[in-house]
Length: 252
Length: 283
Image 1 (spheres, rainbow over the protein chains, first blue to last red):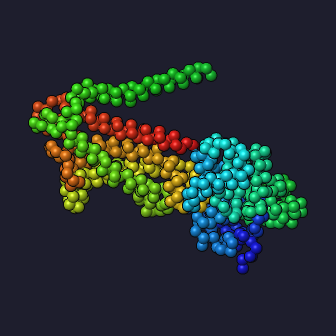
Image 2 (image 1 turned 60 degrees about the vertical axis):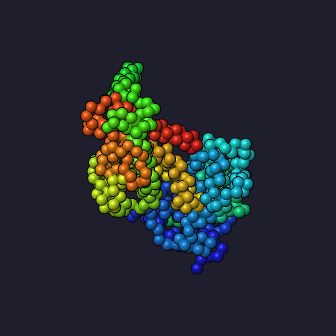
Image 3 (image 1 turned 180 degrees about the horizontal axis):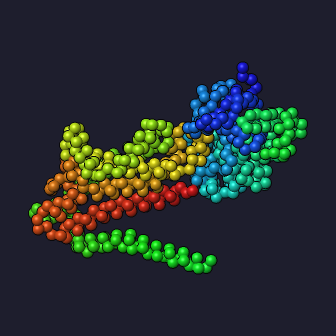
């Protein structure tokens, strides 16, 4: 049975692209309000796992999956895709801003969910930008083209845009891979402060980032979950020797 | 290094001059030739009056109106059908035998000679559907001829919108239609405009598809319904150039000038619309 305390749970999740199996039977539980770090070398299935949770993988015609994913005790295939993705937002590796203004980027989500009242949208935009710690930097120029912002600001704009549709879970797919250390620190800062209201899953190639930010960390290798435990334990006394090799930098 | 740069500079200058010679000069010469020979005949009377005296006097108003009606009608049928087909093919259709067949058909349709479309229109719309030789039959035939170009241009415009925009839209909980409506079409509009105007310009100048389906040899009045025949500029030009003895040559050139002017105005409109949309959306 599904564990009542888990907000997301996968059961024997196998993912395929064409004939290639990317995830080999994954069982994982995500508890509310945690930051779950997911580390592992390239091609270990981290991103596939992330994009399976909000069914973005399903946009790829070559993709198949078996097993089950539960979100709040409900099999996600029984939830309409657009509602599922409203509840489970994602931040992509490269800041993907739309070529419109800062304001319109954030107002996009509320618009597709039927919020048309200008005052209400104004309020959502301001709140989202504040939660993503971008408000002070852009409040005087909300009409600026979003792609004129710096990379770090764009990524926080993406976070604000995701927050504007009021998700329960936020997925991060290597959100800082293109950012400088100071921008990275700002994004991580935002994540820490969002913990109170959101469950967050952070896929990262930067093991130090997982160590800094996440409560629990999962180590993926070749499509398998090698180890999942609280971050301190994983980085200091891992049970599996492969985890030890990876976090100490002996491979990967 | 220096000499390589100089060689490239010389090569590109020569290429540029050749482009000028083979593309720009012929166009200018054609237009100039038409204006010199027919410009004086384009008077207010010529544009606004019915033809008289076996088309040797008077104006070409019915042909102008006919051509504008045919363009508008073609647009009404071809644009919605073509754009929606392309949206279906790019955004909705799964890649299977059926959709590959559709795509292959679209490519092949654009290669069919226009006279075949004329015969097809004659058989299907004039004959089988009993629309007779009418505006309805003519515009439907022109629309079918324009469809492949509209579909191909729209498809390319849609495909040039980055996949990331769609992912962002989906990830925020949009439905597929919302994604197409708000996140794909707005960025594809400049490209769609270019393609559709191109296809409509071609439709405006075609003679073969309207020959059996709508065009009237001589009908000195304006059409009364969609079941009426009309005169059209390209066919009128053909008629007065080859079928009427002792026709003043300047009238042929004047008719050609009017046809070119209409097409030019359409292209100009699309340029302005494109600039307008580009200003609104940049990336």
